[in-house]
Length: 228
Image 1 (cartoon, helix red, strand yellow):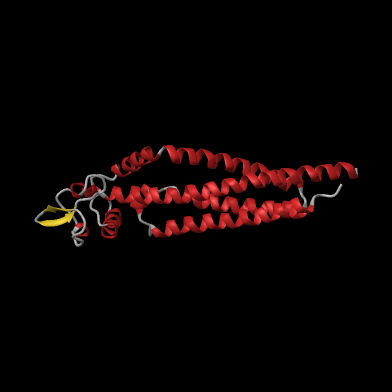
Image 2 (spheres, rainbow, N blue to C red):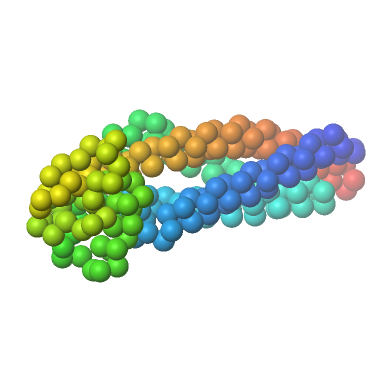
């Protein structure tokens, strides 16, 4: 019994697309990592980027494994590919559900993580510098409560140079009154939407991949049984 060439090459094409999607995830996650400029504050608020990098690498490896299994008609590679897809599909499903229903909880979690850095005047100089860079970029001041997070020594990075923003008086000068946690939660929400969209697309691809892999696996098994 000959293996259906259509299924074989469809699975190869799928794995090529799957491998490309892994490259996309890896590229997006590296971009997000670089866009934080190594900022400790942003790393504290948005820690999932490293996980995305790992997922991208795993998907690329699985895509390569599936391509080899399809071309060489290797049942061992195909079943490993199927199991790997199934596990990632379940994880994506769980992560998608938690991400969709836990938006408010994630905001609370971010605030709790950042609250550990208060009071800011007691933090290490490098952490203070990272926050000051963020304040200039995001036009905010402080982490949770605004300028009061700095105590009596509000840095110049909080100076209200953009009058279109909400400002307040502090120490005889105008400073931004919006805490940086709002910028961070907004950053996280925007990137979460991107991540969920990519995850949904990959999940659909996975369903087709698992169907193709199992079909080819069974056909190879029947062929081998008939030749013995």
